[in-house]
Image (cartoon, rainbow, N blue to C red; front, side, top):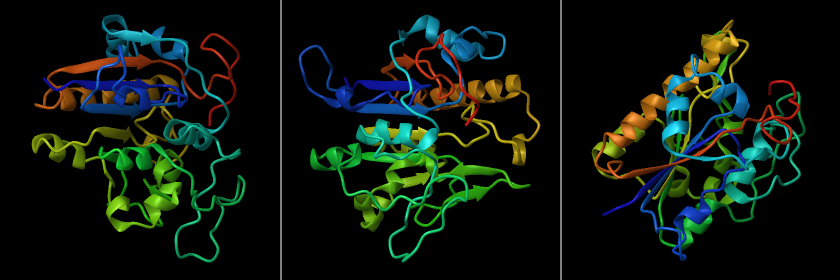
Length: 275
C-alpha cells in the first residue's frame, strides 16, 4: 500500500527531505504534501479553537511536533531553509533576478534581487533520485512563474508573491523550461489528484489571504486577525479534504508542526511584528 504524509507547517524550518529517505524506522513514503502557512505562532493557532477549529482538531488527533521554530525574519530566508537548508544570507524579501534580465528591479524595501542560486535544492535532489515534485502556488496566474514577482489581487494587494515560491530563485529551475513548468497554479492540484498524477513531493503555498499572512490591501483588506486565522483554517481544511478524498490520499499520514514567523525562538517566547 502506498503511504502518504501531509505536513501542515507553521514554521519554515520544517524539512521534508527525511520523509523520503528509506532508512530504518522511517517509511519510504510515496507522497509528501507540505502546506505552507505562516505569520502566526503556535499559541495563536492552537490556543484559539473557536477561530481555528479544524487545525485544532488535527493537532488533537495526529502527531504534533513542537520543536520547530523560525530562524530569521521575514518570509523568504525561511522558505529557502525549507527547500535548501540555507538562508543564503538573505535578510529580506527581494525578488529573484530572472534569467535573461540584465538587471532586475528590487522591491524597493529590502535588499537587492537574488541572482539565480546555483546550489542544490530539494528539487535537484529529487530530480537526481528519480523522484518527482511540483510547487502548487495559489493565485499564480500561469504555469512556470518565470518573471512573475506578484499577482495583484486588487487595490494593490498581492495575492501571489514570489517570496513564498522559493524554488523560483534557483538557476536549475529557471533555466530548464520542463523543470520551470513544475511550478503551477494550485488549481492543478485537483486535476493531478483526479488523474492519480501527483508527484512525490507537493509543495503547496496558499495565497496571502489564505496562508494566515494577511495583507493590508486587496481582497483581505481590513480583515481582523481572527478573520485571517479563520481563512487559513478553512483553506487547510479544504486542501486536506481534497487530498484525503482522492485515491492518493486514502492512506494519508499527518505530521504537524505549529509555529509562525511571528515567533523569534519558541512558541511561547517573544514575538516580532507581522511580516
